[in-house]
Length: 216
Image (tube, rainbow, N blue to C red; front, side, top):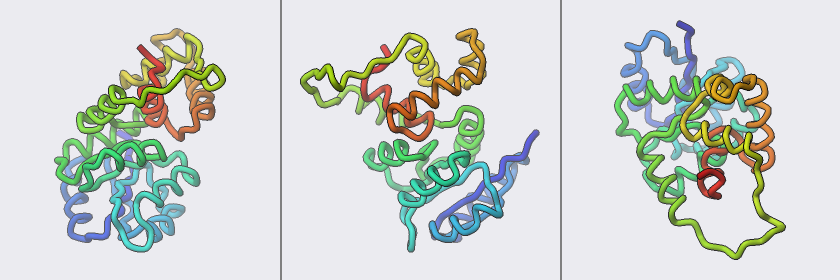
């Protein structure tokens, strides 16, 4: 079983230690970095090289929102799971459209945190019931606009199928098997769509697809 290296950024030491202690029973999860603010986290990333970061939002010096945006650009291979007390849907959509791979509340139990870590490593994102409710709400409450042919979003059948399977939480390998194409082709389609839509990762692609009704 491969080791997943995890960093945690939170300005409350007791909370950090509590999370670390609660995940100790999971032998494949190893904490390699603790930080009490965004600046400290950024300073330690090059040496620690975590696979996943558990990110608080409200921190001194550099908060989790700004830090998430920086890391998603500088270290796009690192998966970021927001771990916060903020339940406001505006935080959820903003963070997950700007580089976060998952969003958890601090009331989450250790089992869900562990599941989120495993999911972002396997699929690139983790969407729990809390986030899914926000997605569905935004999907149903879209602002109606007058159609504009110049701004119409057009995707082909293969791209639509990839997005549909991503929304069903398929991995790249599972999508490749389902569509009878190579995993490299799946990644190329994802990269092309992310560049076209201006999103940074798979979860941003899922958000964009649902908000713009790109799939049935």
